[in-house]
Length: 272
Image (cartoon, rainbow, N blue to C red; front, side):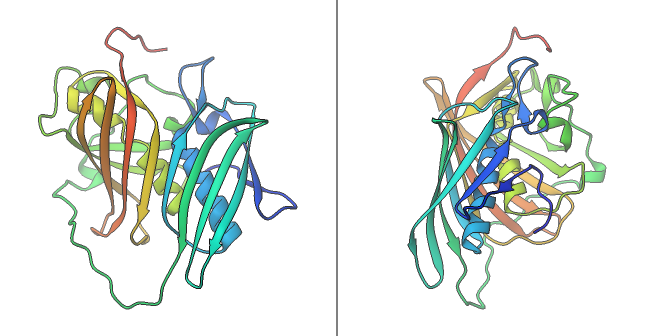
């Protein structure tokens, strides 16, 4: 097994894994940090892939509560249906008796020579021609400090204020700073950057707390950078909805993601 972005650990039970929550997989202001939702999904899909010895086809996480640094998330893998080519699985992540997230998924692969891609990568400058995108809170630690982000379309961080994207669309190139490979887990983490598209669409210091995160894997290929093509569909009643296509540098569509989020507008917030 290759090294993961997070410290997922096995137990004597092949259906139970655990994840120490450290600041480097957490987000939020000092004193109120919590595990990044994408890490929750990523750790669950990694646990399922290792338990089932099959690749994830799709996975969806429902976020129920927060896990704080210093706590340990236990991940219990359930496999109610195991077929010839695919497995239906579920993970319940909890800290003690408190459920943090539930992840449902299908895993497997079928023998087939067919491979098609109808969604094409949009025209975007390569990452080396794009400006680095600074997080609006000027993050110096935590998960965001471990990802390099470059703007391909739209604005990011404090630069977005007063410059809304009328089509609700933004594009960012993302790669892990520590050289981790692009796999299902890393794509799950990148997929949870979708809330940044809300601030870009509105032209405000805005984002969201994810209610869910769904990831559908098409085909993962070697790539250093991932183009995250984010489309915000709309918002109403304090909730926003968006989707993302994740492309390799050569244009290969690797995954599709979508989520709903609690919209957070921070016009009067200060950097903390």
